[in-house]
Length: 483
Image (cartoon, rainbow, N blue to C red; front, top):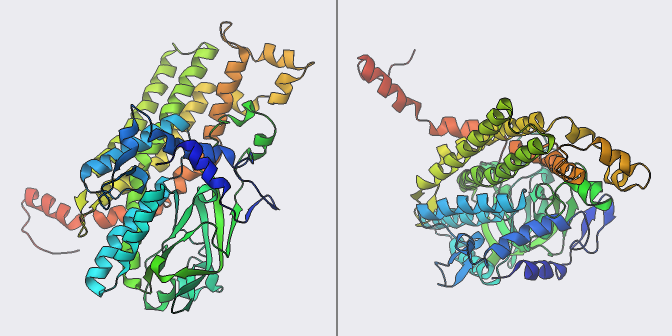
């Protein structure tokens, strides 16, 4: 298993076209727009070597019997699923942001189970191909970008009905040695600093969409791939100074990118679905549920940092003993722990799939993510309430360092006398950058927008069973009557 520094060094060898703000970036490792995201992912590698917490980040491969990173592992027990959530919270606490490897982790697990079931029913050999790929990922401790989201174009139309067929990634040629694909994957977390791209279909499909029912993996430097890095709030601050970034070491969110596939060749040994449209819905559901499981882990870890930041801000301004401040801190902790409990529950209730791999309880996993779309916003609101308007109106770090006006900034933004003004400045910037930008949008739309969770929750709710409970207690005969 690599260390964090070895991971960073490995990225220097990964040459591919990356664009940011209209320019091609030759060295993403040292560029200030990318380095914080790389540092956050590097923590996942270093944790595996931590003498106290390394057991969270490591396990044994069921394929080779060798020690591996948990991020390349296939869940084989409910305890595996629980440990994953604990790992997510630990990393969220250490980085205060997205550490990016869980998307590929969930993709590996989703494709593993679905290819097994596809082979059992269809007589294909996708699962064996995937096992060889998984061994390669485990042996080299590679970071995988789980690429599911397509641009989608007109969302009232299916993939095959789009005005431009490239709005969904699709197969344009089948050859004796592999396939050629065209299209894009959007909003790809950690794509710039991943070694591999694991592609999955983005929706359930029908026979007319068979060319879009495709799953495969390619190295990130495969010819025909282009990466266009997305903007984030306050991203130019990374080129201006350190304090104004808020979280200069690890940044905000996961560094999302658009990946363009321009006639990309994929050899058959790396193709895990090609035309089997009947399994696309299953693959999406498996991936989405695994990914929604995460949010009560990673977001709770981030919430732990926010609670600490809010408490610190209150101390720095002399309000920490006020009853209403303590009540708000209590509410923040309550919301965070509720998120965590739901993710732990969906993991503990996990059950084996036909492959022997364990899958989360999908109803509870979707509930965890739907709660995230509300609770993280409420936690952010409470932090804003506690910290005050200063988090949105502070002068810049350049003003603070200025020889003439810097003393004014230091004087008039001083809080309690015992705390240096710069400390107050720093905690306010951390709060601003964690709560007033991309982080909240990701809490809403990451792993699917709220309506996607509502659809899955209703699908899993078993309303007829609940109706039977009520009618039995009410003394109504057991019938299938409907109004």
